[in-house]
Length: 78
Image 1 (cartoon, rainbow, N blue to C red):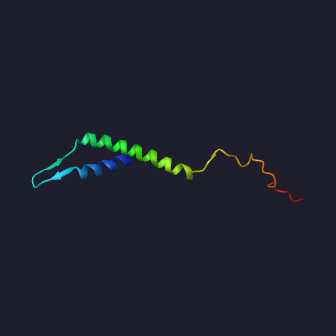
Image 2: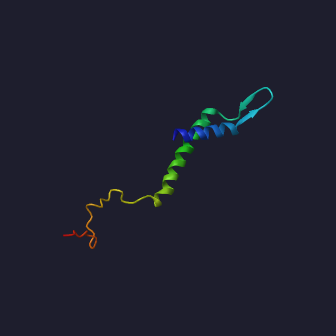
Image 3: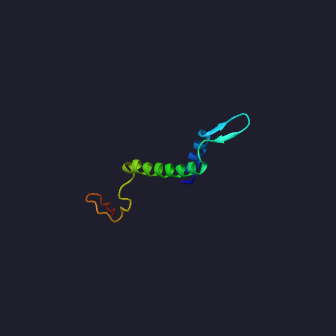
């Protein structure tokens, strides 16, 4: 999450800098931008997980070896 927050922070800082001939000034408080970046990164990751959930495998603890499926028995050749 830190990497995503850092990317968001850089983008927010770039959008909040005013550059003149003699100086550069950040329009917003950099600490507030950092806090917002982490909140946005956390929210993005939570929503990403929610959106991916329907396509993720269900019942990952299913043990195929322990399953008894009628008609799927391997017959041994004699």
